[in-house]
Length: 264
Image (tube, rainbow, N blue to C red; front, top):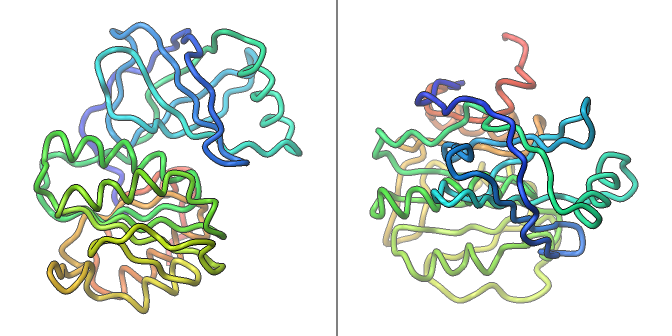
C-alpha cells in the first residue's frame, strides 16, 4: 500500500481560537478553529492533534481544504462514555482556545495524478474525504470523484446534504451512501446519487469492477483509492479492491501507517 506523498508542511504547535461548535448529528460535532494563517498549513488528507493536556494529544482529520485564512474544520465523534471524548467536550464548551499540533499523516491527495478518485469512508472518516473533494473541485474540477460513505444507519451520514449537493452540481462527482440499516427517508434525487444496504466491503464486491452509473462507467483498477475508517473496515475493502485489479501503489490510507498489516 502506498504512503508516499508530496512534501508536507513542517509540523508546528499552534494555539487556535474556537470559533464555532455545532451538532452535525446527535453524536458528531462540527468544530471550527482559527489560528495564525502562516502556521495553519496542511495538505488535503492530513490530520491534526488536539491537546487535552500537556501529555495527551488526540488526532482528528482536517475536514477543510487549506484556505489561507487560518480557519480549519473538524468533525468530532462524541462518545460521552469515553474519558478523552468527555474531556474534549468540556474543553470545547468551557475554553475559548485549544492547542493543536499539525500537520500529521502521509495519506495526502496526489495532485500530480489525473486518475479518477475513489474515496471510501466510514463514519467521521468522511472528514478526510471532504478536504480532498474540496481540493479537487478547486484545482482539478473535471477529475472524476466517486464518494462511498458507509454508516450503520441513515442519520450517521451527518453531511449527507453536502455530499448530495456535490453530486447534483458537478457531473463528475458521484455519491454512494452505504448503510447497514434501511434508509429513514429517501436520498436526494439525482442520476449520480445511489444508496446501497449492507457492509461496505460486501457492497463494493457486488458493485465492482466498474464504478459510476450508466453514463459514467469507470474501471476501479484505473482509480486512485483513498480509505478512511477502522483497520478492519479498511483492510476488508483493500482485499476486495486488490481482487479487482487495484494496484497497491494506488491505495492510500493512514491505517497503513498506524496499523500495518502483517506481511503475507
